[in-house]
Image (cartoon, rainbow, N blue to C red; front, side, top):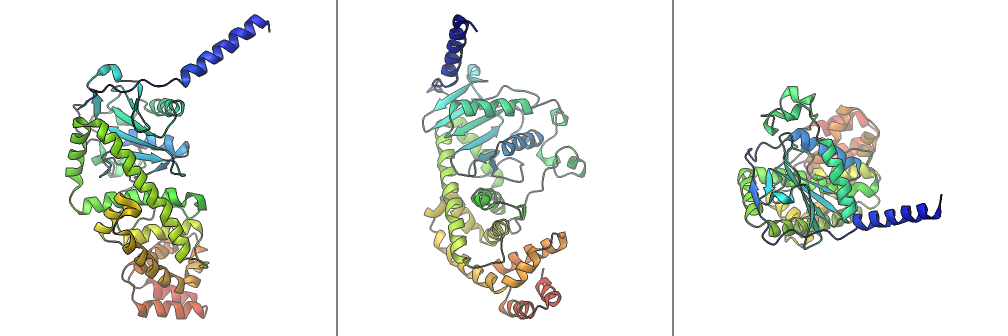
Length: 377
């Protein structure tokens, strides 16, 4: 290659890299939102499902596994976090900047935040808020998410989250049903140890949604979140980062407490520990869940959680042999029983039943021990 051509190529690469890493333009000080015409309740769930598939493929953890939008407290429709608690992406539908020149652009906001606003396309419009991201990585994700929005069934007007639970929708989206507060069981037994914190974030997100719904605050939360974004978007962006920091603190501290109280307990692999942790959290009262998830380890409810965890672990250790026996089976009925035991231990299983199960399993009478464990489940 001639030296002149080589120099031209090198100069072109330098200019390209410079543009890719150049400082982003900031959002204008007078930046504001308006809500678009389609209802905020009509979250395009299949678009949301596609976005979640893209983000999980890229290695991010989904905060709300129900994937139906409208996450309370955060006030957005989905949150994606990396397993190491370093970055987060917040997704919100149905808002557009009043300044149309900002559509399709990635802009910076004070507080280590980047914001992208999509054009209105095929029945959906969204904002992506990137927390702790380099511009080039944010651009990559924007490109991937934009490309995932294709002309499919969700482009038909009227398809919204209310239809996601109908029988026919299993074929068009495959979305899981919303998990109930006391029965978070979506986690896989084969999770690796270093994923426990990230999956606890997902579990906590599900619990947050369930706890908020149980207080009757779900509808008001949706409306108030939209008002907050339209009235003070800068403060809303800052709040998202603060809330995620609290969630990360919770997810990073809780596994260490699990290891402490379960030290020497052989019956649980890392995946099952995540399941048990979620079942335990689901057994807590609504006020405890909301306090811990929204305030992290700074919550006044944190000591109460640790005291209950200690008591729960002591009961679980007594059934070490049975739980180890049940963990060897992949049968769905056995898995359901195991989850039921976790749930009842975290809640109302009494000493008489625990002693009976332990007595039978210690004598290797596993069929009888399983029968005793099934009572009340």
